[in-house]
Image (cartoon, rainbow over all chains, first blue to last red; front, side):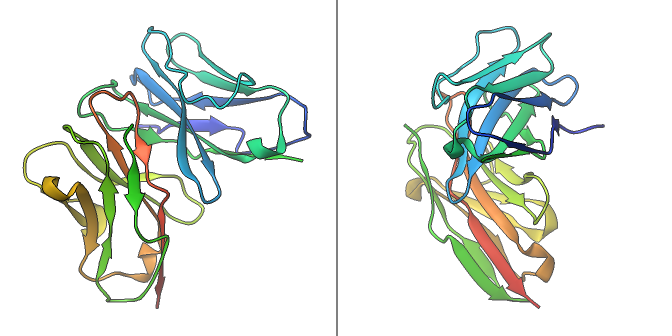
Length: 115
Length: 113
């Protein structure tokens, strides 16, 4: 079956503009995660959705970052008033169900460059 | 908070050499442990995982990892590396009180032919 897909693959934007990044999880997966991968920083958790529960936003670095998940499937990560330090690869992952003995599967990422 | 430490940021080996990448984590309770690999130009893929049971876990492409609870370690090993193993390797941990994975900063492995 299809894996996690993300779009766009690459995004170049100017400082101060808003961007939207999209994630399509694996069909049937109820948990969806966003991470950020910056050069030399490894992967940093941003936000997590499990079914219809309120999302865990504890990893969002500022209030310029937000995400939503419509219909329990597709998710959009929005960054408002982008800054140069937002440049990174944004990864989405999904799993069948969050919790004990859970395996997350990752998408190819969106490479964001803020000029 | 849980944390993961990967000791080597860069490793360079010749083909057929043996590999061991260190990973230590800070969480003291029951954990799930993972190694992910990112080949050049590709996305993160699961290499192997440990949930419970036999602490020696075998993954894809001849990789294995050993969970040593007393040392809070989950080191990755391969007896004989190939050029195609050139990639970045990430160790990750998930404790029962956490809703997400915590990753190490990664180890870049370069295998010369």
